[in-house]
Length: 242
Ligand code: ADE
Image (cartoon, rainbow, N blue to C red):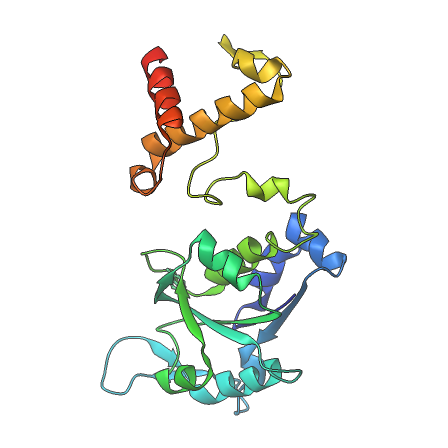
């Protein structure tokens, strides 16, 4: 899968995406990340890409032409699916991440300053996405959030699909609490059931704990779950114990 990120700050994006799991996936050629500097497409000798707003208002807005030229470069080998990251977009969730992971080529346009002239956005953007209801100084952090979350859904990026099929948000629940060595830390013991090697019991325990975790931490998600009578009984029994 290919990602093209159109930004005024390519180093910010590259620095983040060149390390760890995403960096290794790029090195192996599983994903291809291209950063285009919108400033390289400025049409003046000062590489100026922004100007004041018509109708007044504070700050500067990125101009159409450099963004348009940069977009055309991104389209050289075919039209990508184009995302504009902005606080006005649909808020990203795991369902959207999975949907985006099925595209061949995603192009993410990052705004800066007050944003980008609406005319060029109307000619280029397929979807506007926000990473949450707050405002960042630019779209770069949002773009790496999308590349990271989408990449890890692509085959070969994580060691095996178990790494994500059982994790939080994949089936509407949060994952259960997890433990590693030592078995006792500051007097706190790892639950006995996780040590006994009986996989059916471990799975059942983890399912119950996952439901409890969701109930306690994300009641909004818990309310949407269809829970069997058997699961309810286990949840209530466990709650009583604690
Ligand atoms: N740019 C500025 N704020 C943003 C947000 N919340 N999500 C995506 N892009 C942004």
